[in-house]
Amino acid sequence: MVKEIERAGIPVVHICTVVPISQTVGANRIVPAIAIPHPLGDPSQPADKEKEIRRKLIDKALQALSTEISEQTVFE
Amino acid sequence: MKLELGKIPIHDVKFDSESRIEGNTLYLNQEELISHLMVDENIKSITIDVARPGDKTRIMPVKDVIEPRVKVSGKGQVFPGTLSKVETVGQGRTNVLKGMAVVTTGKIVGFQEGIIDMSGPGADYTPFSKLVNLVVVCEPVEGIDQHTHEKTVRIAGLRAAAYLGNLAKDIEAEEIETYETYTVKESMEKFPDLPRVAYVLMLQTQGLLHDTYVYGVDMKHSLPTIIYPTELMDGAIISGNCVSACDKNTTYHHLNNPVVEDLFKKHGKELNFVAVVITNENVYLDDKERSSDWTSKLVEFLDVDGVIISQEGFGNPDTDLIMNCKKIEAKGIKTVIITDEYAGRDGASQSLADADESANAVVTAGNANMVIELPPMDKVIGYQEVADVIAGGFAGSLKPDGSITAELQVIVGATNELGFNKLSAR
Figure 1 (cartoon, each protein chain N blue to C red):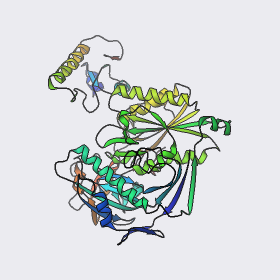
Figure 2 (cartoon, chains in turn orange, green):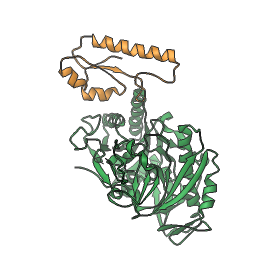
Figure 3 (cartoon, one colour):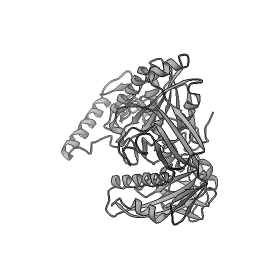
Figure 4 (cartoon, rainbow over the protein chains, first blue to last red):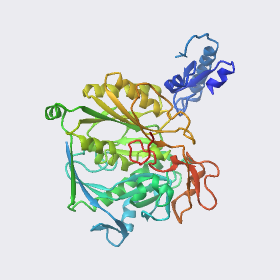
């Protein structure tokens, strides 16, 4: 999906727990996620803390989307 | 460490007033077994059934398959740390009831699969259709949480297997097979010219119904470590793992690991089987990196020439597999990986989620996406209605006549990545 959307000319950020798979598949902008069963949050944290984690991830993804890159890049 | 396995062939299981083994028949007082299992206060009811090869019987959803065994001599008891006390096993003598198994069934979550058909086309895909299966249907008390439910059924299966195994404690086995692993120094002195080979056994450790236990330790909380292969034969590794049943290792698989069997056959002749390294498949990327760093360090430390790596499961564990492979290869040690494929129903898609050019020696156990038709059976033990929601099933999988159309992944052990199956591809 990442590759097909980019082929249509729209940049994509792949938020993904298993970064090596994203690299193998060929995503260009990769943001590491939390864990496979809960990529965008952490159920062990209280609700307000979890919201903060989500907000940071989305901010990072948006930042990645607006960053010029020349090669496959992981935004740690 | 040396272990003798005494093999006692069992051809049939019959209900009787006294539990015992006579000749090749196991007689079972089922009330006694039921009350033995009911000691767990989380169990509401137990029913026992027997499914024989050729019966028009379907067992589903299968939780675990366990081979009954008993320690005759040597330290510890079978299933240490889970059923019996923690004590190192893998030496002395163990009697094994060959040709039968305990199969547990219990509905724990919605997405739970695992079919054993005792006859018909489905029977060809699972090794367990060839065994006389004592099926334990376990119903928990109301209001129990899923993790406790899982543990309850897991332990009930082990307890039943140990009960049956115990019937063979004083029987003199006709066939005895001996397995011996030497210490590092001993084996180098004995086999100075043979290539040194280790086996990296990857264990699924991803949460409820995806977990594996080693001496009672949930393996997701452990770093990779070394274990004698004979410890596996006494039940040091227990399965809590049954979702996407085709490529999950039941406890039966761990007891009868074919990679271990085959390496022992060549041990001291073509190669020196040095050790088994066990590792996990966790859900955090840091864990995957850490564990694969560790397996590569351990095999380097053992100074081996080659490593066989077996995967359990599919999808993100493909990354654990590839990390293990490439980090070990990077140390100049040759690897062969054993996996299975999710290559789409037509077999034309990419087989694994991850890849690397160092993974250049691969054994496959078949394509789990292949669609199969399972005809209706006269009898179903368990809960067939789950067929529509299991992995590999889909809406309409279960037809009104009781037949099932689904992907091969619903069959227990069909694409087992230890090679305990008959499928492959070239």
